[in-house]
Length: 309
Image (cartoon, rainbow, N blue to C red; front, side, top):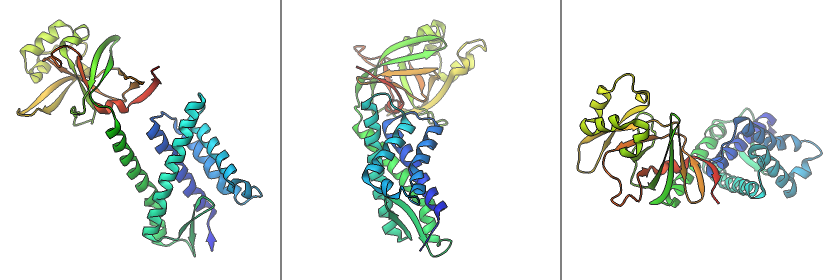
């Protein structure tokens, strides 16, 4: 049996890196690239220790647990014990998920890759046959993408729709606070950038846009509004036209603003969406004014700033 140390190390480095990326995705953690690399390097260093007198220690469950703790701390840091254990348990969940997937694909393809002492090892009589290298090159990313997609769908189904939240919109130094409804029926995206669009009653943006702009919206088609605006209008570079189609109506355009930031206050978290547009609606969104905005559900997948106590 021929064992290539560089292949073993590369496989396990990639595997650990994918595990950490998927863990961060599940927990919605914002992690710097160098922390991912450090965590993966610590994890893959087990390969080197297996060829030293420390092999028995790193193969022992306690040794593996210690390395798991070091990997999680190096990648996600330590804030409090609850935060740490969330990261550690999620890391193990992803490890078992991906490990099962790798074993399944390995069995399906019948490659020469084996799992030994918790490590993925390429076993060949020479440089490697096409099937084993196909498994190495496509197995990791394919299983990772499949798992990420499925976990995202599970999260979407568990999400609490029709939940009322508080939306805080920041544009050019102005802040608008609105009651919002998270509506699963709002699936409006900008088709060019795939940016989710939240809907806001236009009169709620009077302090930002000015009364003349709102009056112009009432009197003109969205395309005409863009044509009639003076170059000196301070929000001109923030305006977007997003096509949409409502039930029973032809295609239309929604006038949108690109905000600096939007903060969503749910019952449990403060969430900052990575990107979104603020669509302006001239019609009221709620007859009794229980909410003045409709939040796109994908906006809840943004960065969690902090928990709400």
